[in-house]
Amino acid sequence: MNDADNPSPLQNPFIDVPQNAARRLVDRITKAAALGGVLLTISILAIIFIVLIHGSWMALRQIGWHFFTTQAWNPVPGRDKYGVLSFLYGTGVTTFLALLFGVPLSIGTAVFITRIAPRWLAGPVSFLVELLAAIPSIAYGLWGCFVMSPWLQNYLEPVIYDALRHIAIIPVGKYPSGRIEYFPANLVRGGPSGSDFLAGGLILTIMILPIITAITRDVLQQFPAEIEQGAYGLGATWWQTTRLALAYCRAGIFGAIMLGMARAIGETMAVIMVIGNTDHISASLFAGGQTMSGVLANEFMEADHPIYLSAMFYVALVLMLSSLVTNVIARGLLAKIQTERKAA
Image 1 (cartoon, rainbow, N blue to C red):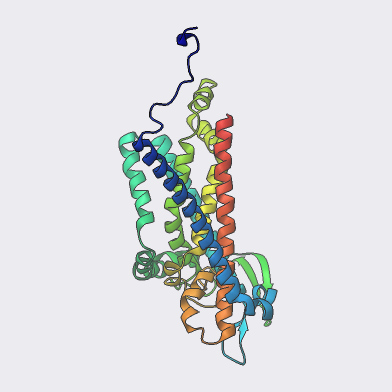
Image 2 (cartoon, rainbow, N blue to C red):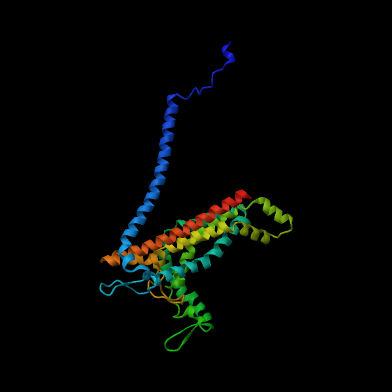
């Protein structure tokens, strides 16, 4: 019988070449390095949580849930009280104002870039919008402190004050003296100040605009051309097709909004330079306030006794958990639109 009738199994002639052995070693090292990077990232996050929980343990035991229901913040030993209700309120108001102003502006900018602007203009506009994300927070704060706040106090806020102060539609509260507070006049109580919730919300609007715009632009660019051409073929107008694109990409757009909200919640330096830094709760947009991240930046280095320091760690823990939850929700929504696009 000829050997040609029983051919031997094919062998890889390069399997024992020294260069291939070196490449396999490089592959193993690369995989190990990648795995190590993932484990290191998870370990860092776990260590941060452990440090925050350990540091805030005294406050967790002594203050508990009253930390969120008490407005008083008095770190003086012997008369100390720790409640972050006013800081939660300040964070909520400034974040709400940032989303109220920033979301329509961001979505409108993204629609302009993807569906209106010619190609020679869309690129530069995208670059300029993304450039806003590269500006340091302290630079925004200095601009807000020396340019925006005086402009608000001297020009915009007096116009808003004159327009709303005499409009009393809905009674929302009664003072001990018997005077009744009405909406929307209560939104401008105290008069223009320039360093207030409105200023904090506007500075955050500028800071979250590039995040929401960039992600919304990328999501709208994934809108299938077949659906768009089909809509036009059925007689839809440009605006109707744009509404269809926004509806199709709604999960991704909402994810972009959540990421912007996470940025607004955690922002520190720019906000504390324009918000007034007071621990009061007021319905007026012209009142000063404080945020969770702001109280950390202003007072952490002054925490000179154990419970005060532990309360600072408690604030940091709450802030990190809130940012983590919003980011997880946003990432989940962005992943959802990817799945829907592939299924379509």
